[in-house]
Image (cartoon, rainbow, N blue to C red; front, side, top):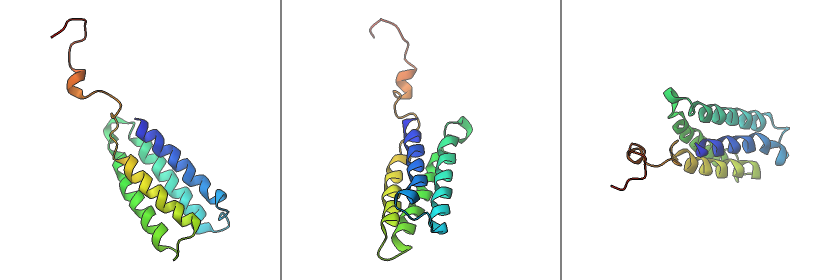
Length: 118
């Protein structure tokens, strides 16, 4: 589940970034970034619950939206919008990581434990 932790950390960066890039006076950027960050946190958090374990895949759509928003909102993109592009590309990579990526394969987990050799 380390991929979900990275997604939540990226959402925190996205929430803080309007203040880093000094664009907090623009309500569209401020509330847009805060809303997208909240959505990423919710989708990552839902992935911890077994019935919604694939919710993190919806982050792929969110990240594509971030990339499009960052690229076409203002031409040429400002540093704040360049941040949206980079965060979107990063989330595209991280959202593809399965929840059980750090565990051994399921077939190996079913093997009997003990000191005997096969």
